[in-house]
Length: 265
Image (cartoon, rainbow, N blue to C red; front, side, top):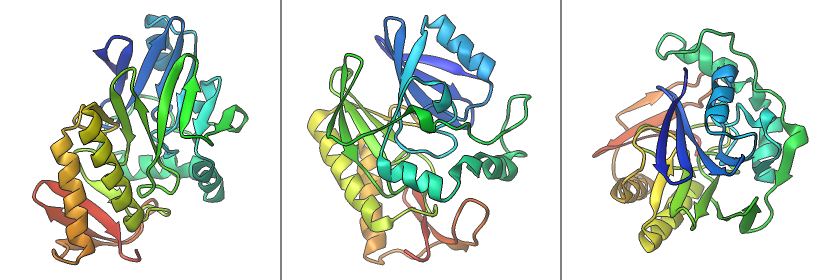
């Protein structure tokens, strides 16, 4: 079995692809809501996860459309996503991103024993998110626009489950602001919004990578580190050249915060 399953709360599960990414499942009878959908590899194992949880159909809330978050979108009834994010996905042919991701990391991460293919088309499943409140099945989510990591990144708040789904906005690990549509100034504003909401609600913070749940102090630390970088207080520890996924960037380490930021910000 490729996936590890962790129950976080009644009806709320974390689906982990070891060494790669986590996404989340909210179970409602024989239906489910996924927040993101992983790499899209090991389909038989994914279908077994659904079967073991007695899930027969599902819809996806997409925080963003990077290859490790949109892989099983094509199996969903509907995919809810930012229009900005999908238009960017089409414009830069992001369905091919997973091929570059695999090429860069094939010798450093584990992979299921199967061929890595482009992210399957899910354009016929789309529903663009236009409002601040989204109702999926009987569940309501507050939609938080959070650009920075990508131009159309979203976070979702479930007051019912007392959780904030962070996608890739912030997590305990290297933070990447050197993608084709990353934007440092937008990222700072998005982090500020999430810090405020997290401190106000005191909900579980659920990113898609590494430590889950995430400590609010780490989020605040990331925000404060970005403010220092904005004011040019620290100097980067080194610079990196562009590759098939990332733009040329400067890398900063401020206490336990690590971040790569495009040089052309």
